[in-house]
Image (tube, rainbow, N blue to C red):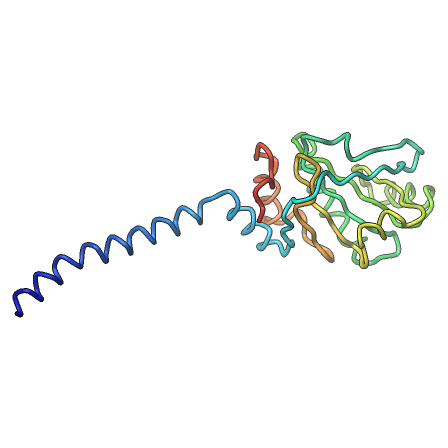
Length: 199
């Protein structure tokens, strides 16, 4: 009887270890999927990952010089959309790190768009000149675009994939020149259709 039990256990052990090994392998494969990588990068930066279930986010506003700009112009690029005002201290503190991120990625598939809420073109132009900011800014004079997107606090940053779909949202300021941010945007700009599998 003992011999039968021993033989049974010896036969059972490889099966058990096989299941454990397969489980570990599957976990390892899941950990290396692009979807998991993107979620981890978002988490590292405190960005809410959003499944890109809806179509492209379309915003059409004018810059301080009156030139109309549509987000659809940036298809094929990762679009960083930041809602801000000149009187928001957190926004002002965040802007230099945004400028550094813009400088690092401006020659890649990346565009930064700062949307000012309900301030004059003259005030925004003056602010950009004073702070030596070179990325694109647009004017939401009425505040309707921000309200339509549910922007309730500033700064709020939206991240769009290369198809123009919303895939990430950050409430409050971030150190956009930090290593977590650089790792995220390097991943996104190098992806063929970044964010298409965020679930």
